[in-house]
Amino acid sequence: MSDQGVPQRFLDLARRARAPQALSEAGLRERFGDPAQVELEIGQVWRARWEDTSMLVLILDVETHEISVVPVTIDPPGEDENSVVVAGSRTAFGVNATVWASLASCIPLRVLERVVDAWGEDLVEFAVARTRGQSRSVPTGVREGLPIRSALEPAAEVRATLTDDLEYLRHAPGLPVEEDGQPPGTLASLLGDRLDLGALCAALHLPQPQVMKLLRGKTPLSPDQIDTVASATGLPSAEIAQTVRPLPADLVLVAEHPRWRPVWVRRAQRLGVSETQARLSGGYGAFALAARQTGGGPAAWDARLRQFLQGENGAEEK
Image 1 (cartoon, rainbow, N blue to C red):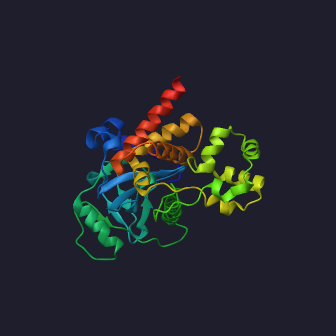
Image 2: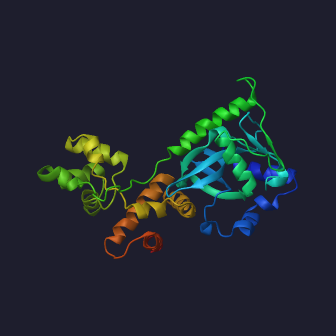
């Protein structure tokens, strides 16, 4: 769960069960292909992560921007009366896996990191029935969970931790998305005659061209920059934050898809920033590039993201 070592624990457990290949990088590629090309499907088990919080989730349904999931644990062991316990012979883990049916929830696509298994239709249907409190015949290799008798039991702590981790994943920060097609006014329009370009450049410690991009909404203001502009202009931070132009929904859908996540992680490491900031600045970089091009839709945004990042990498090499 909230542990960067979770992936290694999968491998350790698999080795003890004499089934390491299925969960190794080579094994995952053999089963699911290139991670960047994996399509989300009901019945897949993914590793979801945001910062230091990580868990396994079984996909029950796929929506446009989020997925319906239920947590899965293999270590530490635990279960409750609503759980579904799946035998290791029916999974790639080689050990019993617990599906916490009472904790079914929706999480954003951007927190998915890696697909690690895919379960049969009978397992998924039984898990869905348990989340709805419906009775259904128990599939082979599956049993219903045993109740937690005391809040002091280890299983109670596991369930509480899963509840907290799900809440954290649900609120992982996403890109600002344009909902009504009407972008807000720019910082330049907000400041009007009060705009002192020299003072802003000095306060933000940025050259004039970069400040102009901020003023025109071509580059988003970071939270720290919002506070700096508020101090320099005397305007409330809330008013300044409202000038940050949201991104087109199609662009957000592409940039937050799991296939792009490794790109943002590598970019964050290269730039020394958070994954959130790497995705945010990359999204606005592609958005600025689109202002000089034509065409729209997910396919176009996918190409523009690649074009922006290729141009960025080329500029750094010069």
